[in-house]
Amino acid sequence: MKKSPVPLLQNGLRADGRAPDQMREINIAVGVVSNADGSAMVSYGLTTAVAAVYGPREAHPRHLALPDRGIMRVRYHMAPFSTKDERKSPTPSRREIEISKVLREALEPAVVLEQYPRSRIDVFIEILQADGSTRVASLTAASLALADAGIYMRDLVVGVSVGLVENTVVLDLNGLEDQYGEGDLPVGYMPNLKRFTLLQLDGAWSREKFLEAIGLAVKGAEYVYQKARDALKNRYMSIAEEIHGR
Amino acid sequence: MASISPYGKRFISYLRREQIRRLLSTRYRVDGRGPEQVRDVEIKVGVVKTADGSAEVRLGRTHVVAGVKVGLGQPFPDTPDEGVLVVSAEVLPHASPYTEVGPPDESAIELARVVDRGIRHCRYVDFKKLTVESGKAYVLWVDLYVINDDGNLVDTANLAAVAALRNTQLPAVVKDETGIKLDRNNKSPLPVETAKAPVAASVGKIGSVLFLDPTFEEELSLEGRITFTFSEDKIVALQKSAGHFTQAELETALDLAWKGKERFASALKEVLG
Image 1: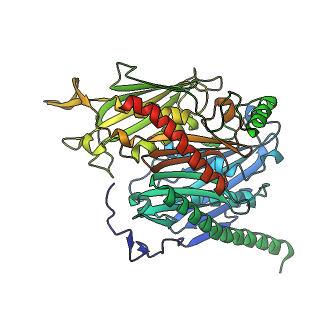
Image 2: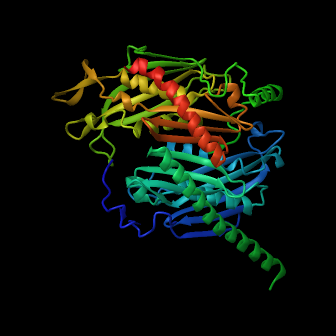
Image 3: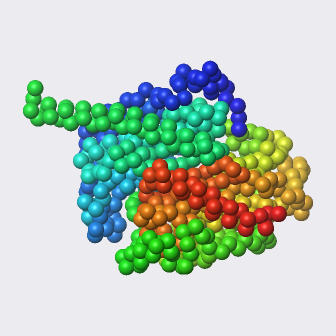
């Protein structure tokens, strides 16, 4: 592994000045795409994901429709200008195809698809700016967009990443830590049901560090969940104001 | 390109699913195994003479062939002093009634990428020894061919890839007026450290029971599926696919996967030496 150009951890602080268990600044806005049935924009530091939900709507192609439940379609995609170095080809890469699949599988446990027989729910996620942890920011954005669309859900799914940097477990990896750290563990979590719906890992982790990281991910997810809830509430308040006036 | 649920049109009859579930709640499985038992493993290397390395693995009735071809290419810009690994997977139309002819779908891509991550993060292959002069490097093309899918492709394909790499002979590099190329008449073994071989073990969840090595039928009945890849005592890759897990289930799954890994590792050891 190549050495980082700057120390990733110094005097207990990370390269961007954060403590190991500190998230970057989180910004969440719900209802950012007016044409969509639901939408959300989520940023973790520089990493920015926009999710738009269309549906429930008629399932097309028709042969995909299921008589007893709805189907969900998820697409994760990175804008060509979202990466630091060269332009990313807009053609979906193998990485994007895999992430689309794991995000779908992370959202499915939360969405009550049985409520939508013969229908389809589309979730489109676009990364506008990438600085690490894109799939977990996507997950938070997608579940907020689903909630904004009024889709029946068992819980929100919030995403956070944890990582291993100089053998220290850290929360919310940025691009630098993702590239030069020893391990990356993206997590999707339903905070009320206390269930993990997304788990991936690379790097080399001992059992102890892995379990410590899972514990930190839960804390991070609970923190993000509060922010996500507030953003959703704000959205509903603004709709109420629109209807009833002030 | 987007991921659509449920993947394909894979169904199991309600009655069969209930049978699997009920039996499992008494800690028995339809094929007679207990939850902590893996199916019989058979590993053969050097099965394809045209490849630079090959292996064939049978896990119960699941059958995967891995072939390695060595090429020359450019190293990745972020690792200029290392060779290149490219893992691809192809689930053949032979493999199950649900498989269609066409380019690899998202499941095949996921399969390849999970196996790839295991190999990449464990130093089983010494990629530093795979550079050649003038900014070029060896490229290891590992192709995973699923011939019959009776469940748990990840564990099977991982064993096949690891065994095929152990079996790989690296062609020498020769230089002539047209540049550098490979000489397949002059080969030497690929540098691998067998003690660090990555071993994947998948855990399924049905009801409250966690079990190793799910079969195809069990995969159609799952409420959760997670794969851990170990190298020595470290976790080097992990992939949750279907469903969800509590923190306690996750810990149990990790311990269970470790047991499965021990079983697979001992089968692998006979071949790797």
